[in-house]
Amino acid sequence: MPELPEVETVRRGLLPVMERARILKVEARRPDLRWPLPPDMADRLRGKTVVALTRRAKYLLLELSSDDVLLMHLGMSGSFRIRHDESEHLPGAFTHERSTAQPHDHVVFYMASGAMVTFNDPRRFGFMLLTRRDDLQGHPLIRSLGPEPLGNAFDAAMLAQACRNKKTSLKAALSDQRVVAGLGNIYVCEALHRARLSPKRQASTLATRAGLPAPRAQTLVEAVRAVLGDAIEAGGSSLRDHRQTDGELGLFQHSFRVYDREGQKCVTQGCRGAVRRIVQVGRSTFYCPICQR
DNA sequence: CCGCGGGCCTGAGAGC
DNA sequence: TGCTCTCAGGCCCGCG
Image (cartoon, rainbow, N blue to C red; front, side, top):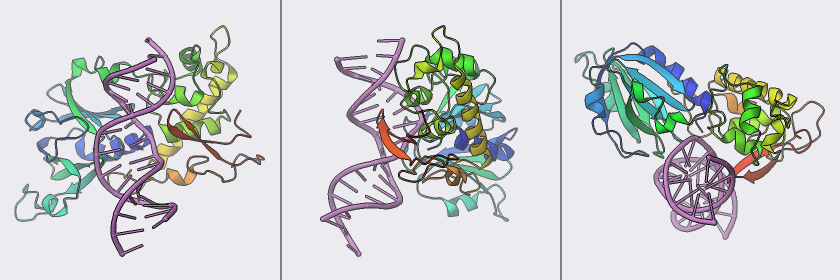
C-alpha cells in the first residue's frame, strides 16, 4: 500500500536523520528481498554522506557523496523506523538496536549521529539497488516513468495526450506508471470519485478527437493533486503495514470516500448512491455508479 | 508495442 | 480453538 503519499511521508520522516548525515555502517541482515541486496552495498555506503534524500514515483533515492544512488522501494509492506542509540557507556555501540530488533528487520543504517534507521518488510516485495548518479535517469526502473503528479509537467494537456489512443479504462490508465507516476489502487479510486468520473470510462475520452484535453481531464488532474496533497498532510494511509518513521499510523484511511467502503452510502453531496466494488485488471475498484460517470 | 494475467510473499481475517 | 483458504497489491515478466 505504499503509494506516493506513504513514500513521501517516509521520506519526510527520514530527512532529519539522513540528509547531510554520515553513514557509519550498514547491516544487511536478510539480503533476499524482492531482488538480492547488492552484495557490495555495505562497502559502498560505509563512511559516505547522504547528499540528498529524494523521491521519484514510489522510489526513495538516497544520493551519496560518492555519486552512488541507493534506490529503495517499499514494496507492499516495507517501512522505515528511526531509533536512537541510548547506550551511555559505549557511545556508538548501538546496543539499543540489538535489544529492539523486530522480526523482518532486514537492513539497518547506523548513522554517525547515533541514529539507527531500520528497514522492515515482512513480505519482502521491497528492494534496494545501487546505481551511479549519471545512470539514474536511464535506469530501467526510472526511465519509463510518467511525470510526477504533484509537479508542473502533470497537466490536462499531457494527460489527454497520454490517454488519447488508449482503449483501456481510466482506472487502468491512471494506474499505469508510464502515464503518471506514483498512484496505486487506493488513490486512483479516490481521485476518480473526487472527479466524478467512472473508473470504467474509456481513457481516451480525456481527449477530444483533435487530441486536445477535454474539460474532464482538467477536473481529473485537480482531483489527483488534491487527494495526494490531503493524504500527504495526513501522513498517508495505514491499512495494514504503513507506518511513519516514528511508528505512528497514517490517518488518511479515515478520509477515504470510496476505497474499502463497499455497500456504504456515497459521500457526494446530494448523491443517493452506494459504493460498489468491481474487479478491474485483477484489482478491486471502488466507485459510486450514480455520481461517477 | 500493448494489455492482460500469473507470480512473488506474508499476515490478517473469514469460515468451518 | 485451530486449521485452511482467500485476499491484499506494486512490479516484472511471459504470452497473445
